[in-house]
Amino acid sequence: MHKRYRLFAKARPGAMPLPVRQDVHAFTMPQVFDRWSADAAGVRALEKGDNVIAIFDTIGEDYWSGGGVTAKKIAAQLRAIGDRPIEVQVNSPGGDMFEGIAIYNVLREHPQDITVKVMGMAASAASIIAMAGNRVEIGAASFIMIHNCWVMAIGNRHDMAETAEWLEPFDQAMVDLYAARTGQKATDIAKWMDAETFMSGSQAIERGFADALLPADVMTTDGDAQARDREINDLRAMELQLVSAGMTRSDARARINKIKGTPGAALDTATPGAGEDWSGLVGLLDTLRK
Figure 1: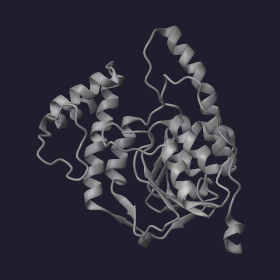
Figure 2: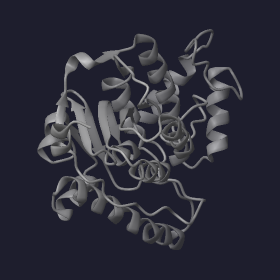
Figure 3: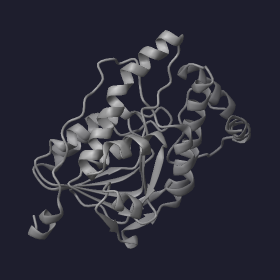
Figure 4: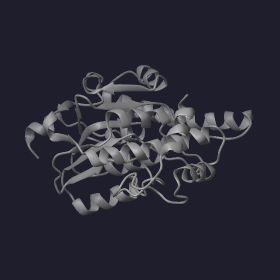
């Protein structure tokens, strides 16, 4: 690799812990999907080489799109690329934080340098993945967003106290990761996570979460992808809001599918919204947001 590039490359921080409990998942908050829909949906790279891994979806398997980015998929792509420098293009609202940690751990084991390019947004679990880069570049109008573990749990006060205690080490692990990458004080990182902070491109560089701005001409907005992202994001946010109100995930998905008129079916990503009546969904989503 070019010597000048290596002068700007950073050592990737150490591995992060993965949970022993498999019954708890840490998710992106519903409002992040709203922000992604408004500001980042459909943003893609103009070019993609044979050493590029594209993360333009939620983190973890996704019920609504039938896709999602998993550690297993990333590991397979790394094997296909081989022992070469790689580029990771990111525009994701996050998803399952623990799957994000697994992807980060897979990437940091790659023997060659990794360049991460944030195109649109790297929020929540996707921000963890971005920290695996030796060099992180971000669009001027793009965002990196960090927050504490956000989970949906059910039970009495003892159950809640147990869950909070169980989550604390993972919040601390994220603080340590961001601090190692940025050089910022752990106390400041923790405050930004508490505040659920969105950082613009220039702020991310100023705080050490990124190294340089991406030229605007390397990115484009795909109209079809934008429409698909926004429609599916509404469903994802609605599901999380219904679960937050006390529904199980299966009940929330059944209710949403019933309203949109295609029970048991995920959206057709080739023809987003085709032949579907979204009026009931729009009304329900507005009510939940209020």
